Image 1 (cartoon, rainbow, N blue to C red):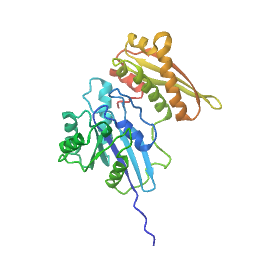
Image 2: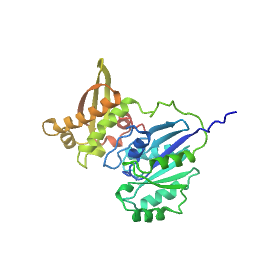
Image 3: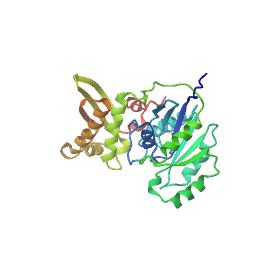
Image 4: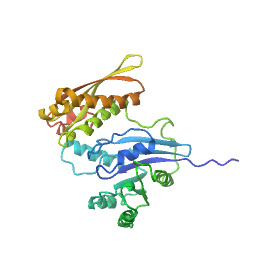
Length: 298
């Protein structure tokens, strides 16, 4: 009788400080742009699922917001998203940026290795450091209880094959949780809203991005091959509204043009994207506003 190769599957929660490359890593692993990325910290606000399926395994990644001390209701929602993603996970993947390590990374590492599941440390951005520095960093984390410590670069792809092998090794035998062609559980309208927010994060001044939220007002097929999308960008101050719109509408046009290109690739159709900008003072501290923007804090 022919032996069958055991199929491994499970949930892998990606954790770490803000801006260490968690979303970039998940996108690289599943080879699809599911989570938005930017140079601004705390870009990811919710738990985002990415699914990598192979004939021998299925890895279900849960990308989470950066671990931080919350100062708003939105921040509290983000930290709850991290805790919820860790509950019932099969493996923890902590990511650390080798170019900006600190005591906070070590504190997170001690917490992660105290869980009753396998814990793997990914040392990210190795393309930006020397071999000598990398060996010193590995020594700092050695002995903290990680099952594996793997140097990687989410940007270049270095080490990602080895990371995948180690994740599969530490996952149990299990079922196909999702169809082979499924790469995320995120609704298209939510991904579209996030793509718009990504472009705003890319172009806006440092004081504006944390107060920006995007609400999808409607998505409809205008005609064959053309989708019409209406979305509102919210900010917390009237002065920020002017910055988002820009002189003669130039900033809003840039945000919309770049977002439209990504949305067209996502939906595989032409898109007519219409954006508005409105002020919602202190929306990050109001439950109803958070829910209307997709941050359900229940």
